[in-house]
Length: 257
Image 1 (cartoon, helix red, strand yellow):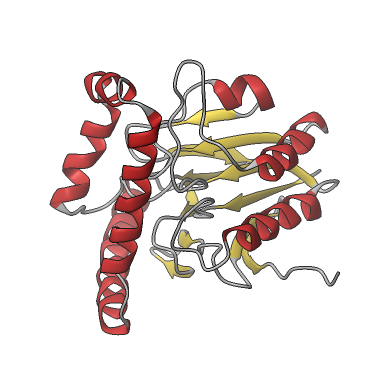
Image 2: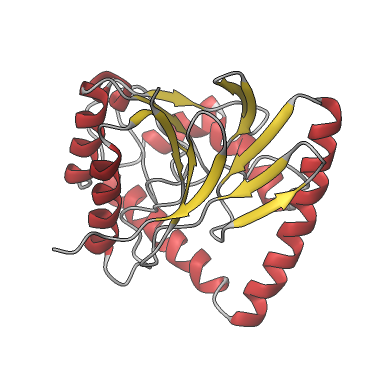
């Protein structure tokens, strides 16, 4: 029986990364490390910092990352990519080229069963009490009209704008006091969400999310624990591993050259 792995928030291509290539190398090294023991891989959103598939072109970059995913898929690993708020405009290109499954549940996540154990997994931006911006942005970004209008603009403008917006958003969140305030609010929102969903789904054992960028292990009922994965812009990112009997958060360390 193979293992199931969960990662999120790689934000590949982000201009805010000090060394974007180092982040991609780290993610690729992780993908190489799980080959041979992985049965499935869940990419829980914001894997790419920006992505939009035009009819006949896609953004440049990510060659090594896509190649590592293709190697896993070709070896029989089942790959599920849950869209986040940065890579929301995934269509069918990667499904056709790599063989992975793109998932965008309207509830912000979906229930899955692994070896008879019930999980709820998703990116995390669509669960719990959301800010006004997130409540507005999710339906707008997913609407057919918005996608069509955005796709009518030349990529030289849309890609530059998206990267500027991402840098601006990251800069607004910089600052220790602001980050601590965000964490306190996130813990409260996630605790409330986890408690509510575990009451309505008594067989639920694990909730696995990303989005918030800092790792978390939060018991929300005697039977259920909520986990948040970390971002990959630090040297020892935190991912999730299910071995068929238990789920754990683990830290990845780059192998020595």
